[in-house]
Length: 226
Image 1 (tube, one colour):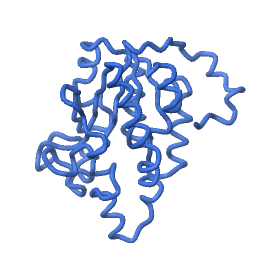
Image 2 (tube, rainbow, N blue to C red):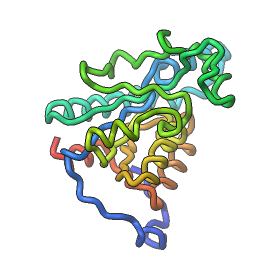
Image 3 (tube, rainbow, N blue to C red):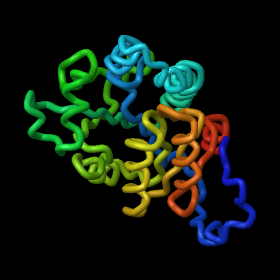
């Protein structure tokens, strides 16, 4: 797990909110584990491969070796204990992407990430079970374009355990939005991935400066007793 090199000397640590983990108040949020950008054989992976680029190497290696196995363990633990799971997806429902902000339309179109397409689907290894909420967003942060705030409050869940892709984009942005709305947010570091290791490390390091906690999948399962 990544921690700031100067954590012991970081003044902001003194201001961190302390919360006692409670499984009954917790929800596992799985972010954007879709074929479009969350699978080596998805649109992004194929595009990079066709271009002869190795940019996706770190991303997909990490997804396969760490993210999918750890999310699988977390899902098993939450489900076995009768806990709550919410999936987030990203993509447009409109052919012209008129339901999405301008900065997202190019990616949606290039990756064929539209509701109903294969690219928009959650990967087979992490499919939702019946009754688990799947919330689609058209923005990077879920709170900006969905009713997730209402959903979580209706469920009585205010402790968010977050995992998925990309660490520095949809995971981090949604986590920060949640923290600013009073949720206790925990990022599960070894269940997240992005394109470059330095981007992952920067997002993790910045998030744990006031916004919330960063722990491993093992630590999450231990503290929630799942």
